Image (cartoon, rainbow over all chains, first blue to last red; front, side, top):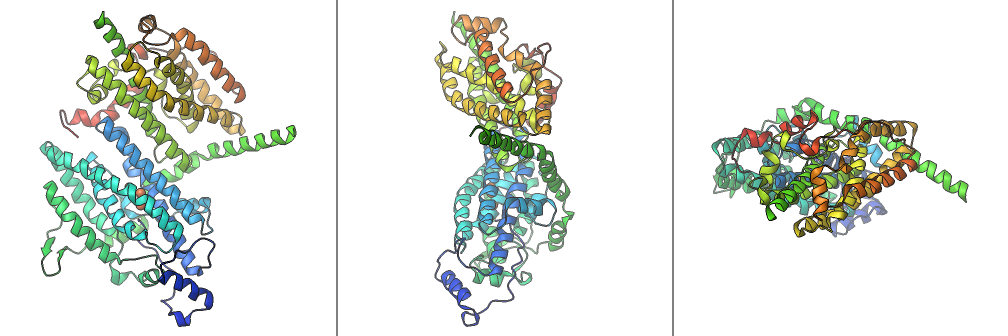
Length: 330
Length: 252
Ligand SMILES: [Fe+2]
Ligand SMILES: [Fe+2]
Ligand SMILES: [Fe+2]
């Protein structure tokens, strides 16, 4: 998932005794691991939180086409070009399933698009960083898709049926993306010294932003408790971040690359890697719109939408004409 | 004379492969920028098909001496060595230009591949067999859009007409035989373009009539088959081949 800062709307978690019968039945379903479906009763807060989370996730997939799309025309081999095309296409497909999942909660795709384009809705900040070299395509697949998988695997068990099912489909494809990204890194690391430098430089730039994809530290994340009770969230941000570090550090070592954090060290007692403090000021700056590519990313989406207006209107005009002709013939 | 035949087959493979590559390259630049999400997906599909076909055609050209492998043929030739039609190198323009370019190409590509399925050379016939199904779908899709947008709103009609006016002069090259095409047809390696041109003209006229679009007058612009391209070509290659040129001999 790429929903790094979803505010839930609940005011603290209620106990079953404090709930009205509807809400209680709803919570009991969740506790019993029964999926909530679109027509089922649900608290307004649950609906709103899910709409925000799913639409944020969908927007991230859509905006996520841009940094990687940036390298399709420059991919180094026909095979890499085809794989990258297929990957970017998958991301658009993920956006589509997710918009459909969100629509089951009573919001339209046009409304969601409007919120993205007006800057009201967020998308993952990771896509506000630039892809400067071919190695960035490897690093994104390896780290960004890797972090996305870490986030999304638990979401396959999300209490909301349509979201959970979308995640099951998406996760399969994301693992393929991660393998492809790692394979790009492998080739670079086995290649000429300039290629290996390119790989190291990409890791240096993508490491911190990738760790931040899990969202702010648990202490600062006030809305987690309600989302957990609702079965929307299964793990805390810090748990997932730790898991990601534990998995990724050995992968970097295998490549012969250095993780750009002097504090990364295996901690025998904890059974985890320790790692340094992240620069959360940067995180909030990017979230506010001051990242290196926020304006370009949103600008590109706005331009696509505005430039495409005549196309969408033309198709509607044709459909109207066709219907009118049909009516006249009858 | 096997040598002469190989030369002809190689030339055909370059023409087919370069058309697929350059159009695939152009279309792929839309990823993430299309007017609706469904079009992002559909265009990526078309580009993927074309890049897949490129691998086959340029792989065959490489076997016949055009280079060490398909990648070298794609990424290490200069503009004068490319054999694609001028049509496919034309800029993306607005979405109407992109769709019109695709339509004018597909309307040739599909019957061409159908003809190549009957080629006396089994390698050609096999690639054509695989590619024709994809091209049939591309043609269905682009024809449908030309009709719907041509006979859509005033603005969509005007934009499609403008695209047709700009691109039609480049379409004629696809069905205008040169000596190589004549030799290919005579050897039973490829269909006769004079016959294909009839089919092409009939088909596009029918679609344009339905789309309420008018075919413009004017001379055919050609040169691509002989490696005489428009100025666009150098920029396409500067983008597409940059990495291979900046890191010579690297594997990726
Ligand atoms: Fe995702
Ligand atoms: Fe995705
Ligand atoms: Fe992905």
